[in-house]
Amino acid sequence: MMKLLTAALLSGFRPFEPGKAGWKTVKAKAEDGTEFEAVALKEGNPIWIEADGTERTLGSDTITRLNGEAASHRKRAEDAENKYKPFEGLDPAAARGALETVSKLDQKKLIDAGEVDKLKDSMRSEFKSENDKLLGDLNAAREETNGLRRATAFGGSKFIGEKLAIPSDIVESVFGKNFKIEEGKLVGYYNNGDKITSKAKIGEFAEFDEALGLLVDQYPNKNSILKGGGHGGSGNNGGGGGGTPGKARYSMSEYEKLPPAEQRRIGLEAGQGKAEIVEG
Image (cartoon, rainbow, N blue to C red; front, side, top):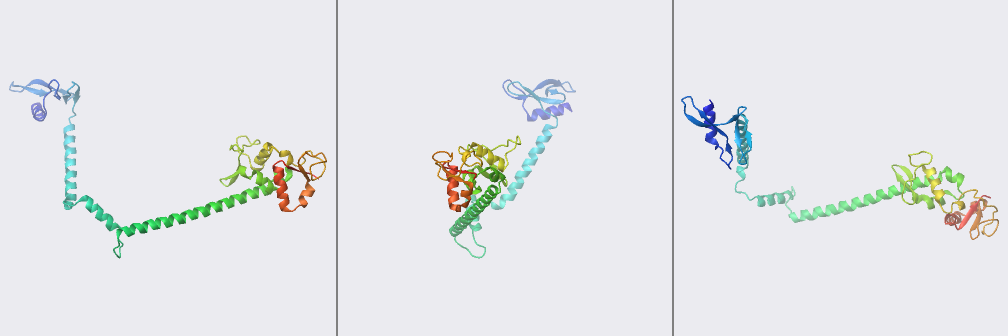
């Protein structure tokens, strides 16, 4: 049995020679005393020597496995050859071009393939135009909704009603830019772009009224828009009654009797530090 295995290996593989890869061999004797070269074994597996002298063993099932894999590859190659045999002689590039042209043909009538491309381009252009219009309308509606949310927040603000001497629409014109709608809520931002964090609830962002109060605290002319700013008198020309020189001065009772347009003008001036509105 060993002699047959040895003969089979040597018939298909060369023995090792210095500088060349081959099978490691040993001297062996047959039953009749004849000497022959046998493949050396290690743990029952033949030994292969690389050209650099590195030894490796070949598992007893390796040849069977490789033969099986070769047979599998050969079977797939034969199947592929049979599958594509009907297409022998066809020019792949020409066939591909013909298929592309046919794909552009109307099912009911033949039309020039170039016209199909023009039709597709026209449809794409119309779709893009309609899509851009829809996106524009959507953005406009979103901005309008956000504007209403801001106006509602400023109009219903308890802080404005209790602390400020100017109406909510004037406050919104000055501080509205500091609030953005995020996930359906108004979020306050300082002028440097930082979100306004709560002083009352550490680790959270400030609610609307608290954020507005913190913005007013940083406002350079906050004394001119706060109620009870420490000013006496009720004159409206800024020259007397203890008012700040150079500023127009209005009492709240006078302010409330003015037309809306005049109230807005005075509110803007107060926001710019050019006017004062005081209780009285």
